[in-house]
Image 1 (cartoon, rainbow, N blue to C red):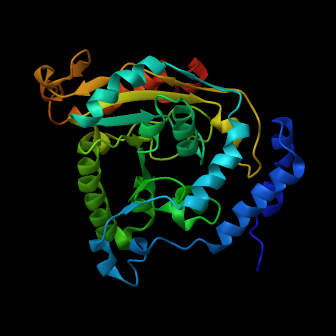
Image 2: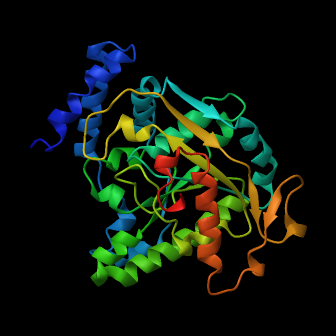
Image 3: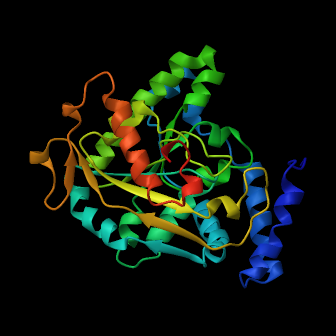
Amino acid sequence: MAKFPWEDQFLAGVESFVAAGMAAHEAEGLLKEYIRLSHLTKLPAILDFEHHPELLDGSPFLEPDKDMHALMYAIFEPLLSRFVLEGKENFARVIPALKGPGVTIVSNHLSLFDATVTQMLLGREADFRRYAEQFFFITGRLVFTSDFTRVAGRAFRTMLVASPRDMADNESHRRELMRLNLRSYKEAKERQKSGEALVLYPEGTRSRNNAMLPFHGPLFSYLDGTVVLPVAVEGPEKILHAESFAFGFTEGAMRVGEPVFIGPVADAPAGIKALDASEIPKDIRKQHVMDDMGRRVAAMLPAAMRGVYS
């Protein structure tokens, strides 16, 4: 079996686990298991539309692989031991809305493993664990075409989409990718109504310089009619630098902001303020709301990380 180009650098990250208190042989075993699963993990069937276009009629939702889920938790538990969760009371406020209009969590995007960080930091709180286990993540198709990230992609509850970058780079498959996105949107809204919180990274790609990128206007549709919980993360970019394959050990934080309902004031759940998008001119409505959410996230970050929302 040929080695992936990133394997040697990936294994060099053992020292970070040792710094976090794990035995070197145990850390090496976890990383080697990640490599082994990366070799074995196949492209999700629905994404093989080049050969089987009929597969696009299936669900774009993937349940997590139990072994990969357990592995990601084992890898990240020591690496996140110096991370703190702030604003717990704001997550508690949206729990009733899970069975009402639905909840959308929006966050800045710093790392290939942000989904792991989001679910684990909320899930290690006993009162939130069962809700965090029902999170599902809008995940770009490119996560699964990469040999480095495909294991992380299968570790959590995932709704597959084509990112703006994917659409631009694969014009010949634009029709199929648009079809995938439409199915994903419809099923995501159904899952939100059934009590599952959607986690969305509206920048569409991770920031390579830690500064926020614009939130994509078309993603407004996922937020519309739901309670939105803005979340800011600081530190995942040091666990895995943009140009590195070796894990690091660092301090970090996840900050949960005040929730806001996107819709008429009369429809907002009790105690949650509303942002009525219908009052915004239609031609700028989507981007206006997404930029508002971007500023809410940015306000919880250091000034140097706020990027376009400084």
